[in-house]
Length: 139
Image 1 (cartoon, helix red, strand yellow):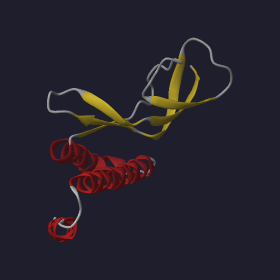
Image 2 (cartoon, helix red, strand yellow):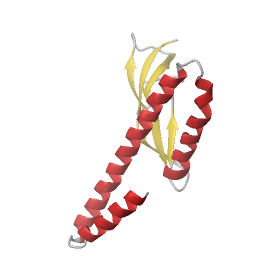
Image 3 (cartoon, one colour):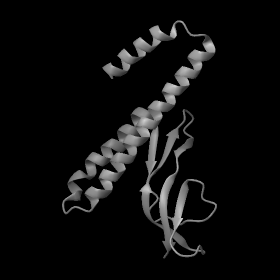
């Protein structure tokens, strides 16, 4: 947090000589770079959670992962969803799918490689900022 404030203060003094359009572009770039870094962190946490679930005592970590999910939503307005086990169809917009076999009715998501990440807007609506990467197979 302190580092972010220092970066902000330094960037503000540097931005002083820029015109308004350049300042807006610079702020947008910083916003998207921060979102990208946050998505990378979410994906790493997801990978760790998947690996921990394969361990014998994975129940010990459940509360920690729930707390991380809560903090992501409360602090960053991010909602992370793991669609494993859900039905899949071609019309699904929140997933990029790798299909095992031929596409047919009744396909399910058998594994999630990256979760869906939504950004919660002030009105409570959700906007996809990362599609899930999934493996789809027949039941």
